[in-house]
Image (tube, rainbow, N blue to C red; front, side, top):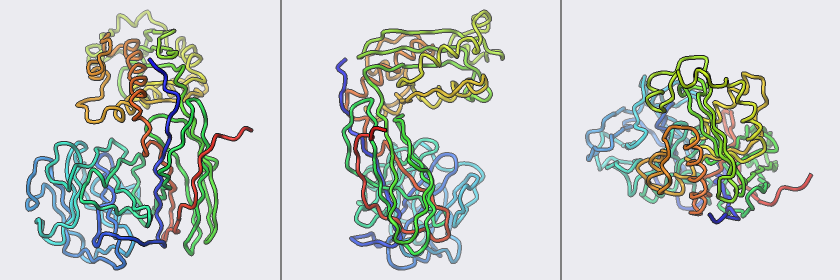
Length: 468
């Protein structure tokens, strides 16, 4: 396979800026963010210069097959006296244990919002097409929506409205949910009690695989109060990220800088890994098979595979899935015998896995139990790469991708065959040129304050990491 040489790196930085506004804004509140799995919330933003009284308004949820606004699946009237301040947010806690203070908690005990397809809407009276103020529908099957559907977030993510760059506010409203909303990897609402600052740089920097790029980000406090910001960098593919600081104190009028270092994976040589386990929780379950495959310039040059003898019996459903029985692993080496060599093979390399957080969680948990150091590796998720390279597939499981891409089928749910497949999926995904989109990397600044400071993005610059 031809090796890609360059990767365009971009990250979406959005800013909550309570003091700087202008440009053309919607004339009504909009739904600015929705989280549909885990802790469910809906956030509203008021882009106008006036307080909006929500008394008599309704929050509603529609399942994907519903075709009319008049009969929602769930309906709740806003509390009497509910208001959204000018240029402010209103947070609705739908279900789950709150991690932030909501303006209104509906109080459902269990999840209500589908994580595959559905619609949330607000109305300025009993639900109807005439009273509809704003709606967002997500998922391919949804009927009630504005324009095309918004993308579907995964657990721990949210769909968030795009910012209007001139005003640094989440109020892009083109009446097309697909164009107005993106998936945000950090699903924390930008409420007045826990503001989230995200700094936006639509520019992309070209970097050579294996290189570390330094982003210099300048922020200025345009408010009248001190701002204490907790900084976090996340991504959805596995780029290795580090920040020069994870906490900033910004006085009114002060401008500060921070550095984000992004290390791009090495493509010429990487190791793909796969595990089979007795369950999904690394704190409770064990590894029963482990395999890695080393690729150089698109070809397999070395591999390793071993069954692992667990301390607990293998559940029948795992034997049915993998074909690995208790009799097979009875004479296999223990994890204490296998893991040190595996960690040595992975150390210092780019490591590819399909749903990498799963394999990483089991490896790091096992290493911690043995008192071994956490691996110094750059993790890459071939599952996320596939989602970006080939959007709209019916499934992104390895078995489906093998067939769809025409890869050798091998034995499914066995570590060696799955490790090879993960490496091949990663290489093919890179060849599409679609794995580096503007929302790969997200830098967020969390602020806990009664009145958030106003932050503006002053400057973002990308350059090779300076030599020490």
